[in-house]
Length: 118
Image (tube, rainbow, N blue to C red; front, side, top):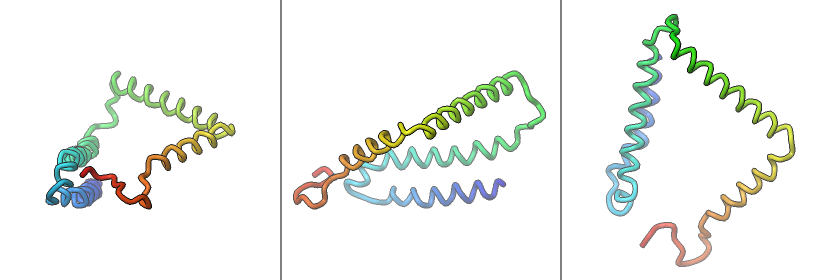
């Protein structure tokens, strides 16, 4: 299992790290973001690898409390989704989200408009 985790992490890093070698304005805009994403990807490598070494048989009070909390959150989320999907209230929410998203996209047909600062 560790091999799959390392492979997935390496693939993600290979897709992100080349952005560090870009110069100019793009470098200024994205440098900190790329460092943050790379650190998060490396951390995501360690968490599953180390979690595989935690013995499952030892279930202390903290683990039981955490499991109960997660189970309650999952059940509540499931009930919320069932209510939203069983009614017709979800369609207007999705439509409003789509309209809002469409309004944020810059119009490429208007000359002189750019999403990049000058």
